[in-house]
Image 1: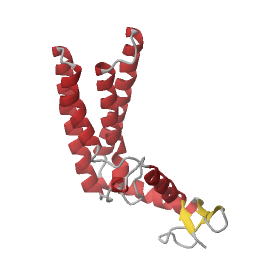
Image 2: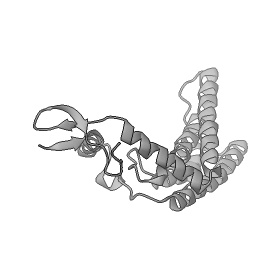
Image 3: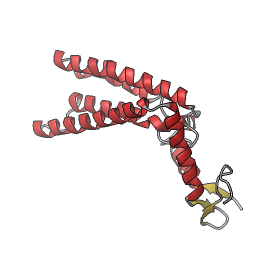
Length: 189
């Protein structure tokens, strides 16, 4: 009987369709490595945010903004997994830091390429993007402020939940969804 986890099917589909490249699957990181990556992201974002504000005040052109702000944001975003993060990957704790990159990019885009000729619509778009950026930044900072032990406790809770929650996979032979066996680390009760 061929059993394929649903997350694998989703990833395979995304890879096959070109939405996610096979190289987008990033090696899992432990908590200290993921924390270091998140801290680097936050420091870079703070620097780019200051540069962006200075560029807006100076009236810099859209092309210059793209080179000085958007390109570094894109490069920073490429260092994070696009969507799929394995259970054992501590990067999952800091995905809000990754989201902050995309959200700052939205703020920049709302200034560089306004969506409408209506100033009120553009202002609203900017405010929504800025609010999302600030929210994801707060969550990111909250996670960075947690100790490694606190993050490990969250991981433990997630593992325990997997031992009590039913998981479903697609059985290729039967052509239907079936219950997946519990992970090996679950104790028999």
